[in-house]
Amino acid sequence: MTDEILSNIYNKALDVISRREHSEKELENKLLKKFESSELIDLVIERLKTNNLLNDERYAEMYVRIRKRKGFGPKRIGYELSSRGINNSISLQALDEIGGWKEAAHDAFNKKYRNGIADDFKNKSKQKVFLQNRGFSFQEIDSVFS
Image (cartoon, rainbow, N blue to C red; front, side, top):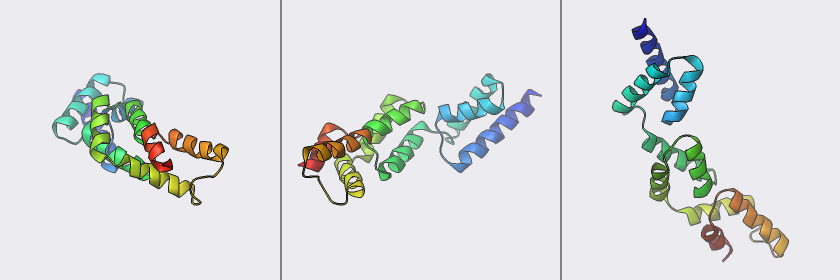
């Protein structure tokens, strides 16, 4: 009976990760919704990691690339990764490897504000807050306005 349940959990896990990359935490949460045995789920996750089918480093790199392309900065992406159970050192490594954050800030700004930098202080402040909310650092925001 345990082997059958283990097999069902493994097949469900393969089904989930075949659609897109998942972090260990994401996969565990999805499996816990369907199966009760956290011990068996842990066994399945270890097996997937051993077979390199589940890899938090690969997930973090993919996630950073996608979110950067959508105009988000490293602070926000790092926070999102940590909420998905990715270790801080893995997040920082992925963010550093991808790089190009000043260019990403420029791209996000130009996409949102086609008319360029505002002339008055109030609107310029709104533009800076937009980039700050997107997760860009002061230096990255400053590079857009200098």
